[in-house]
Image 1 (cartoon, rainbow, N blue to C red):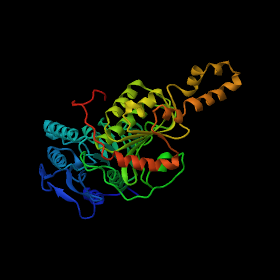
Image 2 (cartoon, rainbow, N blue to C red):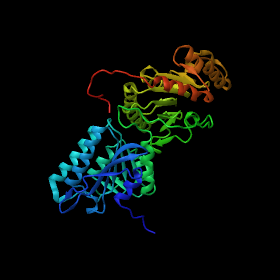
Image 3 (spheres, rainbow, N blue to C red):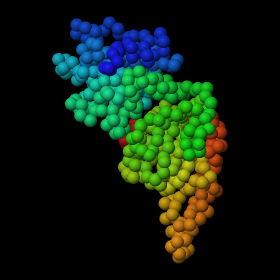
Image 4 (cartoon, rainbow, N blue to C red):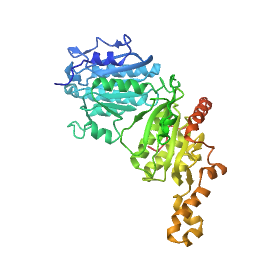
Length: 427
């Protein structure tokens, strides 16, 4: 049984609320026929959204100066109204007979997309081939959703273009089976975003789900509200969107040990997006070290620059640079909570115990491990960190949700003025 046949209008009608889609530039010509993309606007769960779909039924959806004109006009409208833009990609490439006009068309779209970045949310949905410069345009969006049999690559030969390869490299956030599932994922993702960078994200009526304490985000997040982004890239770091008492938040979870270079990149991307649209960030801290200096340095810069509400929860061990970057004064965290068994240490706890307590090294080898752990509990505990002013409060998993609800409510009016500059030099 072959793949399901569908048209551009099938995609748009499934994506937008019933009867809300309005087509734009419906009669624009490309050569002797219609332009190779359908563009328009409507509502998705009541939120105004712009969208375009490359029309494979017209010259295989090939990029042309007419298609570029439709898409850039859509971007201009989004910039004026502040509404999100979702692009659905499926194309055989470009209309090469247009030569330099085609290059100019690609450039116009890339420039407009870059101008929108950080102003309105952008999502790319890859349903078929998306190769060459089209892949650059799709990748300029904040998130990419990809059908499992689709291909995306800046290489026009399509090498390393599969969904698995791109999700493993962090380029693609979601891989779905079938165009309908891709469309539903785009709708779900939009539910966490504000209309633009001047408005708050929409609130929902939800009920908390009290899960197991070892699943900390599920313990404080609203029922069925967590949506992981980034897939398996950068494990064991997890990035997600969720809701706490109905309000969207960004969630970052470090799961012990070392934060890899990919993990740091994954965290940086998530914080930057959340900060651009003033979505609060909740960071669950449990790690001892960074694996890569360059990416750790960029992550420190991202956290320090972010002015969105930031709450850190030390769930396990926060050591040295990790504590400084994710929970200390450098991170700019508005509030820092710790679970009762958390550990805060300038270096690896066991090493700190041996350095700071000479008697441990003098004890019999069989007893040293237990003595070191006793020292850690007594001197590097969450209580000690709180007494010294490095943790705001100590709270068990069962009380964390209430703390976060109160904190997010207080921080909802947070306003921070930053120094005038064009941009950071860390990328």
